[in-house]
Image (cartoon, rainbow, N blue to C red; front, side):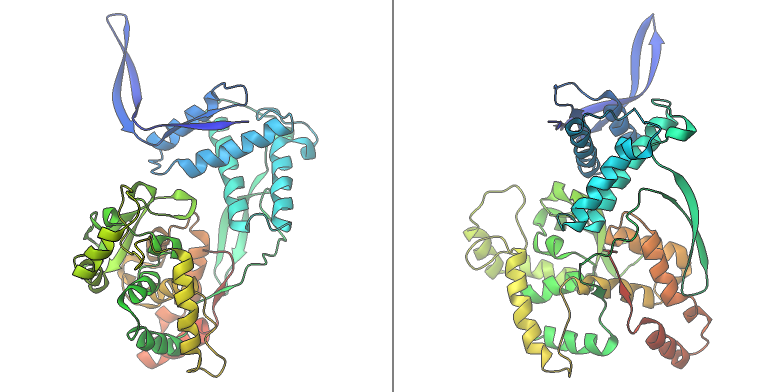
Length: 411
């Protein structure tokens, strides 16, 4: 079975020159992200090594593991089915990339993986082939390509039409059984915020990390002092503090990706007051593990605050606030993240950057791998809104355009 090896202190040289008939390596780049892929025979897959170096040097990839893991998964599939990565038959169905696509689709229908995960696995394989072909490491005839790439036009509700690059290895026609995400409306948000003020500080801070900074539940509950120590002023949003999150700070992020997030200054100050309080120092002393990265949120039992613990408090909170609404409070914790995105795009903050750049900024904050869904999301909100000439008209358009907005599989 294929396996990955990681080198924590690896030097990649960008250039080589000859000095006195000897090769001299120049412009060394030290990284702790270098991975090596070995096949089932223990042989290093050289094309994968070249690809990983390319991602680190040319693409400045900060978290290589998810991509390396995706390629390892593909290699295991090849070995299980006695296929080679660089051999494409005339029969499309017998090509390894299409066979892998069918395997992922089967897993989707059986509920073994989510659509977003399957799409990521397929995308990483496609990008690997794009690199190998562009560098001349492999070549295929036009009739035997690993996938068919083409451009297509996607209409938005705003009337705009966008041209995107895609392939025939997407998962068309698959309807996810996952619940839809729904951002809270303005009235629901007001009631939510009022009731949240009455909750214990830790629960309140965790919820606000989702609604005001866009963190996933796994990211909020695994926040560490190491991540807090990276805090610096946001250059673009002066009332926000920027921090780094990712596995290198002991945090659980999707696909183990690292990114920067921005926390409102008042919320960050509340977190700082909490981690310097006597109550927190007592909990920290009771902490039962000796991990390198100390968590911000610790239970009274001296354990890390888990997602399960937060969900338990969330359901109690939902029951309490449900009485304020005729139809109850049908909001999931992950919907708080969608609410953050919606509020970000509805606000006039950063409008000076232009709509597309504002959407790209949001994409980075949320950690989306693809900006297309994020960009379409912004158009639904902003297209006619920017044409409104008075606040009353703006509010009317907001209610009409955003009241029932839902996004599938975007988070």
